[in-house]
Length: 538
Image 1: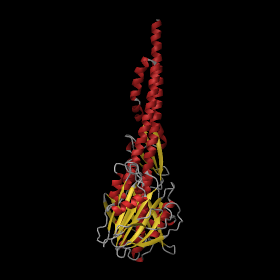
Image 2: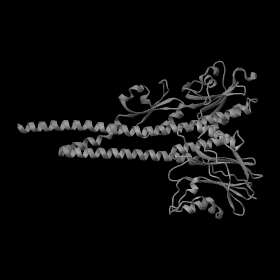
Image 3: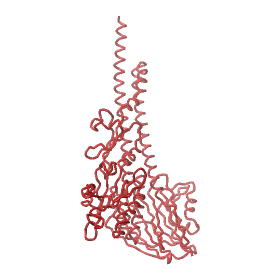
Image 4: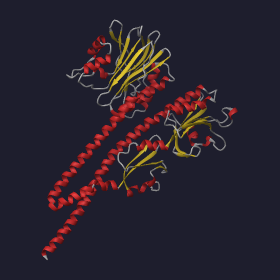
């Protein structure tokens, strides 16, 4: 009888111990999974937010280009149908583009005149939008644009019955010199495109992404969650992350099924049972060590994934935007190259050959990683956009500086050199923004640095007035522009290149970039290395 009680007590003790172990294991695993998901999803969603901002930057560029086309064809309104098609082709993320004019702006067209091009099933359709049944003067995107500021108007997502698509709209007003309304330029984005963009960043199988408007309206979700209120998700799932995507004010909710947590502790239930029979002390020690190792592994894997993901995106953004189609013109020989270091930075260059002028820019963004790569791509896009309506290096530099300064919460800056070279007489007009002075190598091999006013880098002070300079590049001479990664490069003996050695290498080598590579040898660059050469043949 005594032994029976002992067996019963042992069994009860074992059951209680297993129950406690089960509870503790479940709680610990839940906390571990929650922490892991919080960390990774926050990083993933932040990357999605940054990529969304990068993608939506096209909207501002598209509006600006469309306003330029409207200004050019204001007296030829029928040409605007073709212009909206060109904008849609140039910006693949757009669902539709249209230009809405005030009533009777063109009497022969009637009260409504709105050239419009939209995309459906991969095809473009161009129509004249607007009539009594489709009175765009009452639409929120039209009234909102009229009262909008510099950034334009972003609408809430809505179902457009004309296109049978859930969309959100960015619109902006265009006024003449007397502040009279000329038209409203509007661009539509599909919520389906936004959903696909967010879903690219889901790090776990089974993660469900749901989009809601700011008033709580369900925009899109997987089939099993269409009828579930977001407030009940914590009862059915582990709700790990919410993020409001700006500037469109759409809330992203990411939920994880509870079965993922059970799967994560499935084996930790069986193993403690066997160990518990051998001894409570051994079980306690093993579980303690297991938890410690598990936490360390989760932390290391999360940190590794964050770093790899950041570097991959930064490298793609940086290298994908650089041009390689150098001019094939007997009046000029040009080449540029960029050697990234192990950690992605923000070096940049760009150029444009237009008539008898070669426009170019070289620059270096402070910092590294995704923020530097995004800032670099924004700088290049601003340069390309400014070339469309400005004709002086100083004006281009100042416009870029205003935009980068007004949208710079991280206080990132970029040094830049913008030049315009006349290919006939060699006249070089340039404006420098804190960048290194270029070198000029004449036919005799003499190398001199251009004396210039340094000014300040872009992104520091939106009100700074830059000074423009000019010089002459003689026929047969070569202009060499570079970033500080060149002079700060180290060889296999960790010796610094330095400015004097760099000048000597330019004198004795016909290919400066090859000379830099030979100097580094088995060493490593301490920063991105960017080099641009422009030579005027005789």
